[in-house]
Image (tube, rainbow, N blue to C red; front, side, top):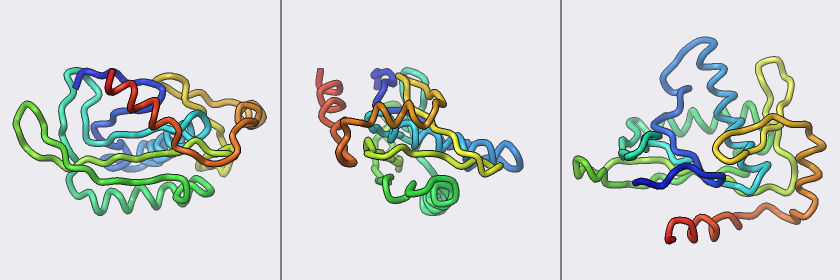
Length: 168
């Protein structure tokens, strides 16, 4: 569990929106959507939820996954046109090397999209995030659109790069 985060993936112990209330929860919902959109607007990627961010990584899992998954899908549906259509959620069971326990985690796979993906905030304005290495930048719609000129369809082409990285 020593691989560092990269352009194609992001480890999350949990999603902040699952544990907060009020304005912090509202802001964290937008942050979650921007994480998804940033991958879609770049080369695609994966959010891995239930694994610590710090090295050495620990598999901590997610409790009450069914309700948390429902919440995540509702947030995407509200704040991202086509967010549910482009996002693939997959439950995976992993064993934590330190305690030997089996834990349920969530893989959220996001394809590179043909079209620009925007996120609607609480004021009904859109942001256009793009993944830059381990973070995101909010840029102009036209900038992302010009980067997508060679993309003819939604794709998960990043998976071959991810496979190579993991097996090096």
